[in-house]
Amino acid sequence: MDFLDSIRLLWRRRLVVLLGIVATGLGWVLVMLNVQTNYSATAQYVLLLPSTANGRATPQNPIINQPTGLVLGAGLIAAEVNSKDTVRNLAARGFKDPYSIALQPSSGPLLTIEVSGTDPHGVVAERDELLHRLDQQLRIMQNKEIAGVPRNQVIYSLKTAVNREAEAVPGAKIKALLAVGAAGALATLLAAVVVDNIVMRRRLPGDGGSPPARKGSPPHRGASSPGPVRRRSPDTEAQTDERPKARPDQRSESIPPEGPRPRPEHPDARRGTAARNGAASQSRDSDYSARRTARPR
Image 1 (tube, rainbow, N blue to C red):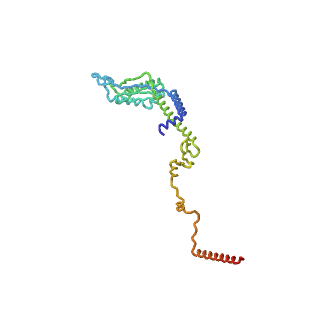
Image 2: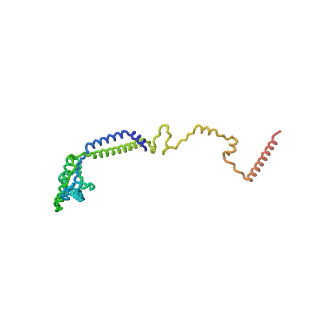
Image 3: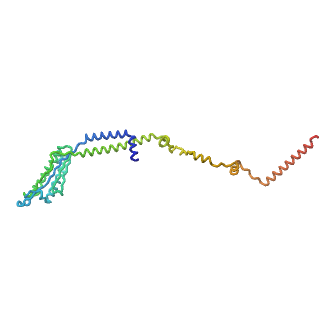
């Protein structure tokens, strides 16, 4: 089936196609009404050292002073906040939206926090809670887990790109609309093909499934058809009539006479037949002579 055949099939079953389009439109309306918009709240969390980390005599910009130890500290506190215990503790407090805390080693000790959900206020509140827990874990790591940290080398955090309102992410609705449209188009095409096959089979005669012959078309060779009918053209009939006919004498010479052939006689049978014929002739002559003698003169 090529493209033109498909177009003809869809045109024949345009009612099915129309119903499929209507059903797909209703599906899009349901998606717009039921699929909720996703919202996202993000922030960036950076670890920095004090400007006097290398000595009071040589102060340095904390953004420039980025030793590799800061990346390690960022990874430690991110792993703690991403743990299952923290996830269960947040869910117990009502923060059930999924979140992610990712480390960007190529950019230094930079953590990217993202919370997504259907409630814009809920994702903002959960993001703020995650920032608070990161600060809490940073203090615990430097005050309790690591003892004797110099005051001029205590790590602190810098929070950037913290939006007050959540941003709408329309990807969920777009994906749902595309999925409904693709499913509706496929279902419409399959329904049109199935309905067309059913209708065409019902139109076939009951002689084994051969399609009905159109007007002016040669008969279809099916299971019960006697075969193709060969017709002679006028030129062929004229050539057949112009063939030379055999003469009577040639016909008698070439065609043997009909009927049973005589059986050949034996020589003894021939002599016996001749003797019987001679005796019969003599008896007829003697009878004729006697009758002639007895006739009165």
